[in-house]
Length: 593
Image (cartoon, rainbow, N blue to C red; front, side, top):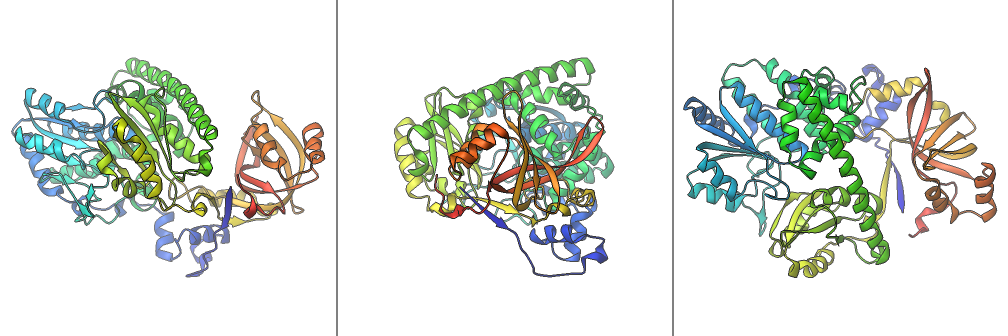
């Protein structure tokens, strides 16, 4: 079930023509609360000069002083990262940045299965044995209370760089016993934009270290901006404010990157000759990097980034692509298994929060499976599997349900837990599973209306309003992503003409749509059986038969869509990519699934 919502922000009207804007772009920006001349100019003209100074980050000065002291004393520094894209990029930025500063640096990225998330006692022991003088964490550490206590007992200095929420116990923030904690989400932080990823926190640390060592700012951007952009996109940070600037310029750097590993990865992914945009990072480059940490070790991805031999880099890149194919297959199998359980036990009507377990699912992909289930059903979803005697898993949340806060209330049932409002990782003992499932649902405070997926529409258009000028205006709002989605439009009461089903899997529907003002081609990427099922409950059998047998429709559609340019054999035409649809004139508020 869906609820379509047309955004209509009419506050703070300004003379947008003086800014060179069309009414369409102004209305889209206004709907996103970018509605003053200052906000609009800043949004449309991202500038590196508007990046926040690292001095706003807590403990940045004394952490940097400690690091410089260790470098000057020739003490070994070890970076302990994370196995996802953000962790790999964070590790690379710190490793390369500290090496430029003359540091004796190495790194350790935990194995997802063998080590679990973040710094642990065994890594601290190994660092002591290896004569390491300083550990720097990245994309982890803010919740490592016990581990930092252990490091203190072993005499190991630690600098924590992280971007996750600090643990909350009885409503009070609890931090590790460490004087060097760089995290914008600390309660005492003065950093003006907290939604940066771990790699950007690492970038800010290197920025300050470069500054106090008189290394030019251009080198910082040339060396690291693209890696901060990749991590920002793949960690699904909101592409607003500082993140918009980083991704805007980072993509420019990425498109002409001199990094041998990234170029090899683009070549192995068959995107070398394309303009790399958010999509390519989020759905091709990122998942390929992630696959190493999911199915093997993220060391492989980091080796790719630091490799300086073209042939070796390409071999690593091909290995990563193969791993990504395996990951996709395992994910599909895991999703189908969990989906079957939801249908088997009719969970959609019984549980506001889905907590599901399947011991056959690889621990490394439970988060992806949880995300896909959440997208399909719009329920907060936690997927668990069995690993080393514990149930381990990941959760993905929906709008209006702060998963971190709610699960924090049940920490007494968990062995480990961390995350943020929209996602988490956790582990618990078998005997606590049933109580956890009961309590997470009883405490959810989720109402039925919260589970209705909301589709936000930027503008309601006539088809005659869609032209090349509109598409050029939309491009001014790039880069698109979380927090700045590609604008979507709606048009009602469209007559269907020339209905065709394409593709070997019959998963592409092409039709021409006409609203009386214009006629445009439209594409729906969906299996035709699903389309028929969705519309059949509102049609007489004869209407559906006519559509199936003759491609003729005696009903109209309302659609939510994105207009795009379709290039085929040198021809460029406007096409509507359909995101959502419904039969015109049906009262969907009464529909139940």
